Length: 224
Image (cartoon, rainbow, N blue to C red; front, side):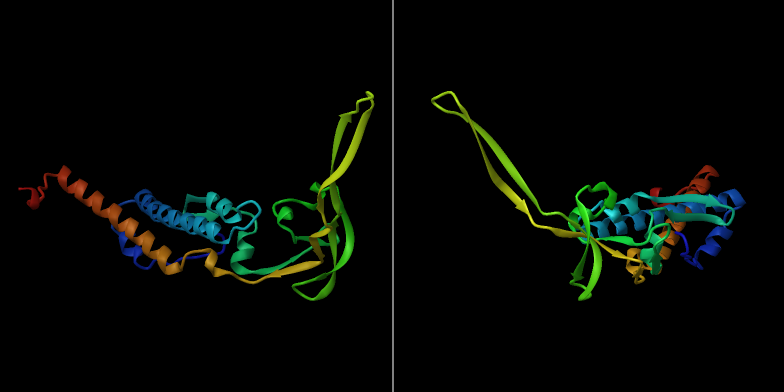
């Protein structure tokens, strides 16, 4: 995970028990895969807790979890855009545009403002801040239903009636920058990840030791 380090002091003696660098990398990968599984489950759980509308951000983050071998061992990465910002916090400023568009309505989440063709620029009071703020407002809309009826004289009569009406609503707030607070809860606790990795590595070593012992003629006394 970019910017996150987990020190596995208990893993050092485990790695020292293997006989080659390749075997050490393989053991490190076992630990990394165990951590990746834990992180995925955590992110999927967050998605079910926090998702209200949009594109299931945390499920996408879980789907983006990957493991790979590196010269120093193995790493777990999350490639979902914006995840680092949620984890560490920070300020996002508009680049190449004058203002950022911040979704204010469920229909706006997961979509860009340009995907709508019925937005107008306006100033409205932001209920979160109580201040007047520029925004993009979706125009009021009325859905009409047309019906045709043929009269006794053969003439066709057309009637029109409104079947639904949508009031004008703020879709996006516009701002030059937005600051996010750090949220460490988007990842499991470091102690949880460390324990999961070390447990998986120990289990792999135990299996390898038993397999090697049986190949050299060792007999399990419990089976005699």
